[in-house]
Length: 117
Image (cartoon, helix red, strand yellow):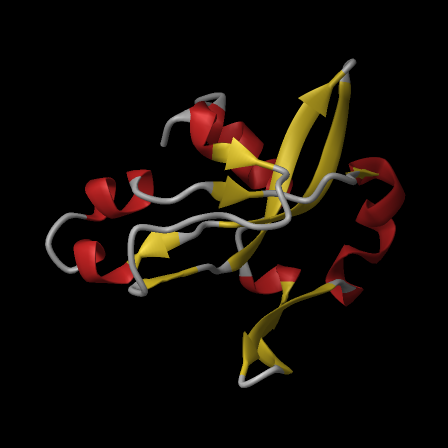
């Protein structure tokens, strides 16, 4: 995915009504320290049925404007829960909820990226 698709905007525009997001944690390296925040892998679901790469490029990827030092959250990593909400009929409705432990461990992701896994 292109880095130009990443945004901290509170709203994004899509080309249709076939897109949705998935809450995920976001890792960032800054000033020699690992940081963690939240983001959404917003994807056009209709386009995903015929080309995943195209579907990922069709939508901006919103990320939180605030991150935490990974060292501060690592001791209680297994207690962290991510949630996302949608607005439907004027009501805020829980759309997705899950423990961060259901995803790959952040340090394992980094090792895999570095080719050390």
